[in-house]
Structures are given as C-alpha cells and as structure tokens.
Image (cartoon, rainbow, N blue to C red; front, side, top):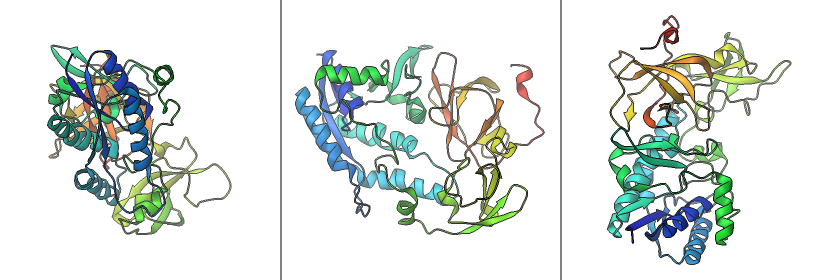
Length: 371
C-alpha cells in the first residue's frame, strides 16, 4: 500500500476517475465531499444534494469510504466575502482561483489530515512533476481542459502532498475510463458557474448581496447611450444585455469607469478600445523562485485562452505590482481576472491579478529584443 490519500469527491466524473486511478496504483483511498454553500436557495437551484448523491454512488461503486464536511462558513468568510468586495469595486473576480487557495488546498487538506491522510487528490486537469530540482505545477496534457490557471495561487509547500491523477488524460479519455469502470456518472455534465454556488442567473443572485447602483452609458467618444443597471453586472468585452440597439455592428463593454459610475461601450468586435498592448497587475504570486525581471515567457489572461507571448517587468509603483507587455494586443483584458505565467515546458510559474489602471501608451515595445 502506497499510503492514504483523501480525494475531493465532488460527484463529477473527473474526481470519481481520479479516485479509481489511485486505487489501481495501490493507494488506500478515502472520499471527502465538501459542502461549501448553504444559503437559502430562493432560485429553487440546489446542486449540493444531487452532487452528494452522485459522489456517494461513486464511492459505493469503488468500495471506498466517503466522508462529508461542511466548509460553508470558511467559504463565506474567505472566498465569497472577497468575491463580493471585488464585484462592488468594479472588478470581475475569479472565485475559483480563490476557492482553490483558501478551501480546497487549505481547509480541505487540514480536514483530510484529520482523517489520517498522507496525501490529497482532486480531479483537476493539472500535473505535478519534478523540475529544476523541485516539485512544480504543470499544465494538464489536454489544452482544452487544463486547469492549472485556477491553481496558480496555491501554497507551493503543498505540492509534495498533492496528486492530480487525471492530469495526463483528456476529457474524452476520462469518460472512456469511467464507462469501462461502470461509473454511473460517466456521462454527467461538467460543472460551471460560480465556484460551489453553481449555474444560476447571475444578476438576480448578486442583487441579494449587493445594492445595484445604476449609472450612465457612454460610447468611447463620449456620446450618451442610456443607462446601465450597475457596473457589477458587466465585464470587459461583454456583448449581451447592454440594451443598446440601432444600426451597425454590435456594441461591447470597453471599460467600467468607477469615478462617475459610467459604463463605456464601443461598436464592433474589432474596435481598438477593446484591445490592450499592456496592463498592470497586483504583486505576483510565485510557485517557485520568482523569475528575474524583465522576464520573457508565456501567459494566459483568462481560462482556456491559448498561451500568449509576454514580457513581465516590475511596474515601479509602490504597490510592487507587475507590468505586462504583450507581443500581440489582447482583447478584453479584464481587471480582477488573473494573468498566469508559464515557461516553454508548460511549468506554471505563478500569476497576478490584473489591475484596473492602464499602462502608459508610450512604453517602448520590448519584443524587439530579449533580455
């Protein structure tokens, strides 16, 4: 027996196959189902009960014990409160990133250790491998499912204790393995929506917790175009739900101007205001020794984006953030989302949250030379 590993058994096919693979590899496997959300469900949408039954069926089929834990208070205090604060500040936060750092790879791991775990495992499409003399986080082999983007802020000290059993699989291969194992959730759809809260109508949900403050809508040229429901309901690059009609191409969100609570829109998918050659970020979080700056490498500024060439510099501000300059202008660079950095070997080096302030437009373009 290789050791005792506690698997975050969510009810989905990915975590069920992860548990099965660990059994095949000779580990003692225990499942742990997390309930992280328990507010009154006024939408009539309650995914946790169905998820638990699916996790229970998988555990019974695999003949492993299943425990359940309620981390709802920790989730509310450490993830959801930050999510609401960022929305109120006009950002577009990514709660999955924060949930991984604060809950799955902290609260969950400590609870798992209380169950006697030597290791923990999840159904993430990511890998841990030895590189440069230490364990590093790598992108998953399936580029369409790689989830290292959501893991870039976890404490690197946990990597020796983490398994990602499906990191070398594609989604199709995971489903094929689930069918071969006879798992009842082999065809179950992938989860989406707000982390642990699920798929629901975003605006009505957010109105429960934040007061909407309507304001004006202007074009990038300053022409009034009506009013918006509240900046928290919009994100950079958004097309749907703007309430702006008329002839010509569709309209898109180009900016959210907090100073006067104004939503700024641009007409046409290719409008220059939707693209940025550079941006600033908050201080970086690194999963190993920080790279020497300036650093040339690869980045994603949103999940499932293809890797983009970037130069990273210190921005020279008191915030000790980073200045990113892209080899090609990027569409819908969104404050609150993360820029995650990779080297050419698919090692995830870390990342940083994109800041609202734009970078100066007169910066010399750094891709004419490297170093």
